[in-house]
Amino acid sequence: MWYVIRGRCRMLGPDGSVRHRLGDNDLALVPPGVEVKLSATDITHLLAIVTLSDTVARSLPPRLPCMEFPADEPLGRDIVR
Image (tube, rainbow, N blue to C red; front, side, top):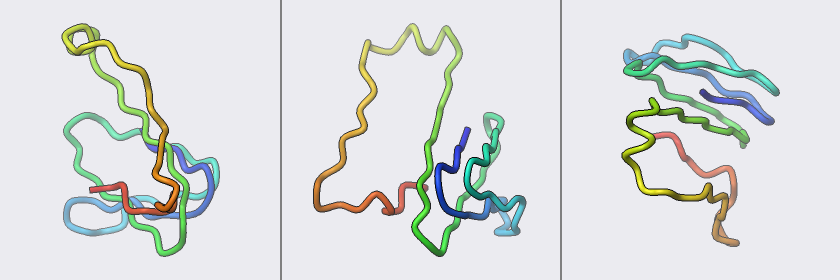
């Protein structure tokens, strides 16, 4: 799941074609196994939410969410691979 907090981006398919345009407060649900890329020309603040099945989640070690960023690294960095 991708949530656009602020800004604009395009969701591209595997062939590079634009599938959707997203803006402030838009939410995109991407099914498992579907390859997409997000592309933005300006700083865009995104929230990525990843869910796992109960079986997979229970096999992982316990951990807490972390939202720490180095002070010298802008939030607009490329986080989509």
